Image (tube, rainbow, N blue to C red; front, side, top):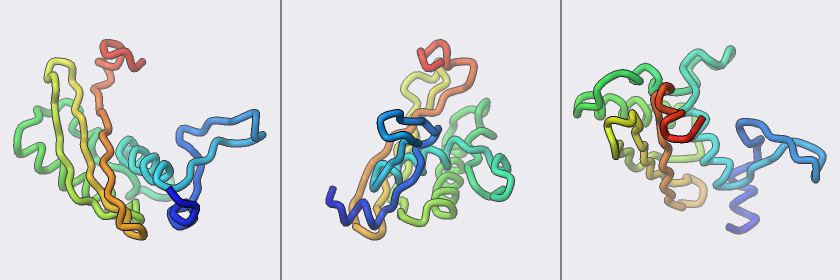
Length: 141
């Protein structure tokens, strides 16, 4: 990626914040890495969790124990698309697909195809979402 794209897309703190002793400060992300981190933060943040931005986040947590049938997939896709549209102005969502590789594990892979508005670059990001009690089973705890 050229320096111009990094300048256009911005720079921000990595979340969750990490501190780097070599630079004497917080780890920063630039360009497309910053955009992807922002998408993940939006998905994993519950509505109302941020005090002064109650509309920030997604409704994915509300569906944690719901069956992933076609109606729920449609509702979730529309909800996630709206959340990203409202909270990440650098992108246009092209498609969202949900995949449940093993329903017994309680994991849903959310695949988001998006276009960066300023550069017309199309990217794909797959974000896994797990039920909390299954995190230890999958080795994510």
